Image (cartoon, rainbow, N blue to C red; front, side, top):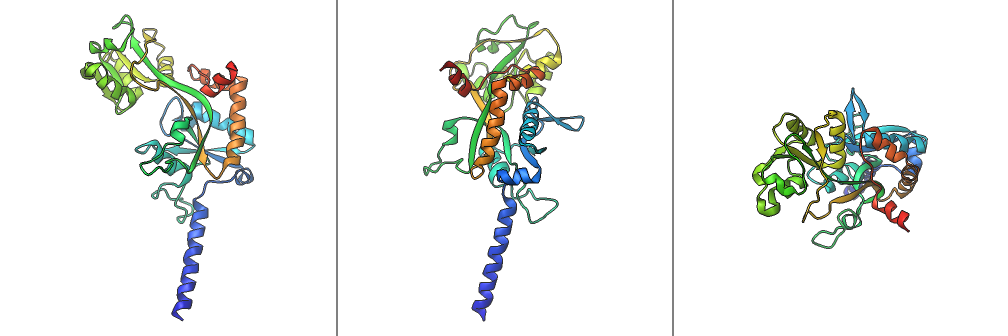
Length: 308
């Protein structure tokens, strides 16, 4: 009798595990279409890409997401992402597994509230196939696809305080603001033998750094190009000028941005990729960026195709 009870218990446990597993999954293409909506994930409070304005989702990535939903003939639903320690954590928590604390309010058994598609993921083959110390591919549970923008770093400076930024070495003498723990932070505090370290001021994000420049606390800011473009456009101050300097020894200074889905949902990825590629080729993507006061640069994939 014990064996029979144990067998029944095993079956019950297996059934519950299977149920939880099915509740935890993102969705296949057919499921998305049948449901009438697609849940697209982007980073919370991250202008000009994704943020709330008067309680409504806005930003470049939000506009792209809405067009993806329209192209699929479904409703757009936002999935807001709070950054974890690194991108691998963000992909795990929001694309293929979910966070163990992130429960579904309507169904307490559903532990994993995740997106069908995640925006603003590096489209980089080296990163996609990066391996851990055992040789296992770290990001094997996701597919990164659909490059839609090329991003880079940008310095903006106050023309009343500086005549030019021909080289970053000028920041041995002029204070510059950066987001703490960002690549510009690490670069400016270590390059040129650390001679710019004392002049590098740290802020929570690019917006706070820019606000400090507006108040005269720093003479320049270094952040992502789109962030700088957006801040300059909003300020409407002609004294804030874009530098054209390079970044010696910084490594990769331009990178492509794309999307990610769980590896088992490639059909959905193909459909989304077709919509985004059409936007890039038609010029609609550039119009979205221009709408927010941003410069647009084609991803490397499209630049290579146009040169062939």
